[in-house]
Image (tube, rainbow, N blue to C red; front, side, top):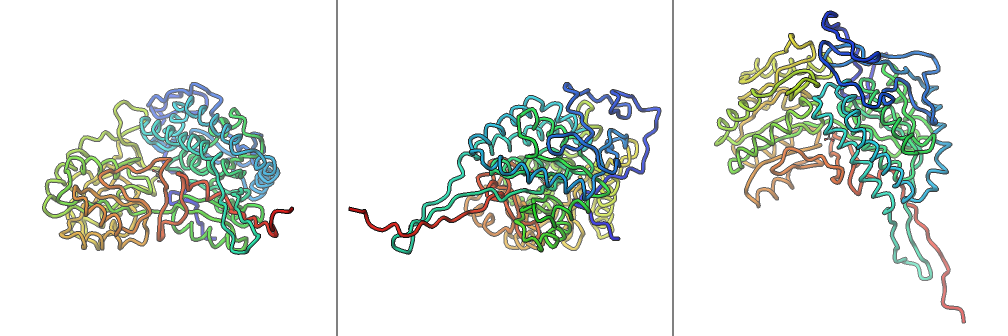
Length: 528
Ligand code: SIN
């Protein structure tokens, strides 16, 4: 059977073993290779079970899968390898919890979400430690993610009581028409490893705010962070069955199939690859589910001649190398107008040269590993393809075996051509390819060649150009004179093969609601 995975960054089956003499056991549960990782302040956040119907449980089969530190390959925990039956039990629990949860007022649900936000904020350091442990991103970035993740609870705690319907002037005399927003029902959430906390909270918070209950499939590579979030849900007082976290690595496809084909699940929200999104959409068609998909990107990052060069360089660094290039909104194709190309390339490469690649907990580390060796292989392939076709690696370009098999040098490549792979494929790694262009029209055409359209960025000081180009670029999100656009307050989502639906913002909650129309007839005249 062909194995189809639920994210563009599928399961880590570690095939490398770090040299054992470099291990230093830090706690009974987790350790890393000669690099101290701080212990959790609250050790009870380290869970190695799934969370269903208010209980910490194992898979019915008793099977488990391993979780590894991508920096070292070291085993850091195990989790239940759940299957269809386990998933169905979680769906049943969410279904049973739905009537009472949806009956609460938005204000009551919002208060509980706010408690969850407070707890995440209080435990942000511990959440960040878990993120670095299983995802590898530097601790400072992981702390940023913990804060970002918590912000979705805060945002949707505030949206929950403000879910207004409309009063509609009826066409029929004597009729009155109004709408109410109702929860869509039980939701299945499937999230990736690149933001082990934020991608989950971005879905759970609006779902719960709307009055839905959920079954969340934790990412196979990063389930420990998800389990800590589940533990905080208990402390926040979220009633049993409202949130259910199931875990699987090998059975990920089976779980995806169970969620999408269930009659009880009324909505699936997925973040991951376009190919898997297409599969999940097909699987959901028999039960006509509501869907929202945040799929792959291939973000254009355009620097016009009139840009503030320093700002543009900094923005490109932030956008391209965030999480070592492993976000869906990372710049993938950097287009620089010919008049400033050499200057930009030189300044950009100089900044990249200053990065410190290493283990996430080590002092001064700015960039961590990639999630697994398959990710490295793609990066190697993109660099080789560019070089073979005449591009020039001006910085990096190689693996870093002395750090481990998942480390790659932050790389800058000049003389890129549109025929090269980076133009059409998302690299999802720390490789910046710089393309040169002459005119606004030419660069917008190149930007729009991608079949995906999640984020795009450009730098210019010309106000008219800013409007023109923002309107012409085919993406769901545009950053003008900034390389960072993520914010719980701003709608996040794409067009074309990047999917549909919006997360965060005032629109995010609508993805988990239906509009019910109520028509009252025969009002008549005042009775005398
Ligand atoms: C993603 O990579 O899918 C999300 C990135 C973000 O929220 O900034």
